[in-house]
Image 1 (cartoon, rainbow, N blue to C red):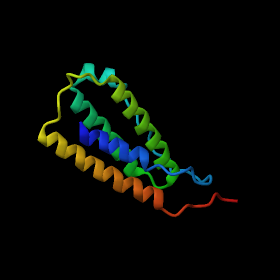
Image 2: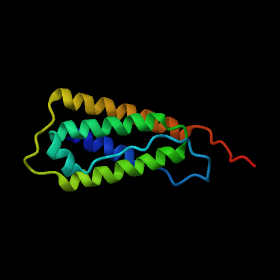
Image 3: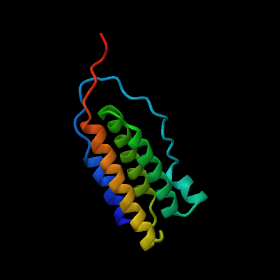
Image 4: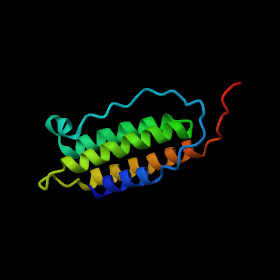
Length: 125
């Protein structure tokens, strides 16, 4: 769970002030189920891994800072809801799950950095 919190914190803290308006790269929206709905359907750690995987895939599709900022906000909202819904008896991630969380966090960070530092395309006249 520490790795998940670290990944969410890194993603939320990595957001910079909004850049000047640009044409955003359209991507399919990521639908994140509320944490309590995910808990009912599958174990907490599995639900977190699934959602973080979806957010990572979406972030890797971003080609500009506007897209990355939009997803960073989605991750922040999800992370806050997850923290509020967390129960003291939630199971701890296994070593394999922690490894997967770290890998997803690393990939997410790489993709976010790439999107945030990509050259901005000015709007057409």
